[in-house]
Image 1: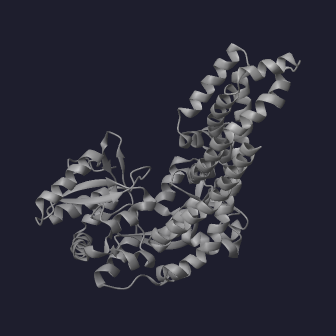
Image 2 (image 1 turned 180 degrees about the horizontal axis):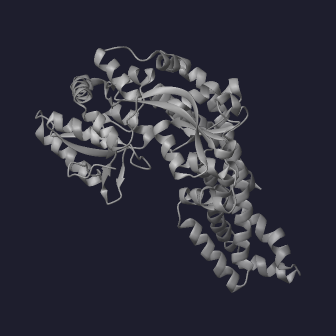
Image 3 (image 1 turned 135 degrees about the vertical axis):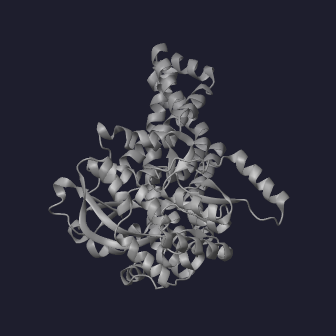
Length: 505
């Protein structure tokens, strides 16, 4: 289905990016020879994805459009990988010339970026399990139900707008693949995304169907830095010519995406007509009108406070689990048989030697065919088990730091190993372990931000949603940092006070 030719761009790795930067510095005012287009190739079909035949290249209808633009501009296309939620910020920074990865036309983007004319119109649709299709036909039928979507999209804005009115439970995802797999597994009751993604989700997950009702209408555009208006105007002319002569139609037909909505869109674009009424009304309904950063901050602040509470609660429960498991591991490694020590040491090294993110994916997605853990349970287990490995090393070191003479004295007094651990060795080891335990809790508090990949909306995830919607990380980032400090500093002070008290006693 893809276009197999030598014009397909290669991935940009760190070294090639450095050479490109050096080239820019040495060429000075010369005309650029490349059109750098940014996008997310991770699960990005049919927009852009790694070519299965040659993973060093990317393919997709956005890649074909970028190649068309580069050819008309007399440049060569070069792909720059960027996570979907950071494409807007990267475009504003000038990390690439144009962002093209299913970027939706919104009033918020128009305020802070230079947008091309729209080149594809899509419909937001609701996907449900086939057995539920008769009773779930519209969003109103999903009251109190869990509805998944991709964060930082028009679909997410629509669901947030309807969340309180309809009593929906909105579950944002980091990518557009897992919502449909979770729907098939029964973790969700519906998914709302654009029809391009919905058709792929249905084709990859038997038992899912798309409801006939249209939830909304949107359009794909290219996004550029605000100061790149001249390049944007050139690209607009190229896109309009491609609309007239059928080259855009040929690209979308090649990818099986051409439909009757596109001729109507192209007619409006070529006539210079304003956006379709339903699109404009939808954008106004989703709160994407003119709004200052401070007004948005006041609006998002309650959500940030709620997310901070989620982060704190998640961290405390996970740390309690880590301490309990860590004590058992350390005790087994100090007092257990040689076989038990070997097994426990292997477990500790396995957990410490693999990334926490991988452990989250395995617990939540990998084990779903065996046991479907709720997202919060999987998050607590992953954080608790991961940090338990590190806690066990702290406790084992603290236990071994107690002078052997004290243990001999305990035995001479007739204390058993358990009594010696409880009354002599354990209390002293706890004092030694307190400082590193506090450090680990602060680290866990920050690492809890990783659980957003399994749909838990904690402080960092809520901040990223806030930042994407206001188009800046400055205020949201500063507010998030202040909240993390407010959560971690009191505990650090309490730990230092306990240390001083024990030292004086």
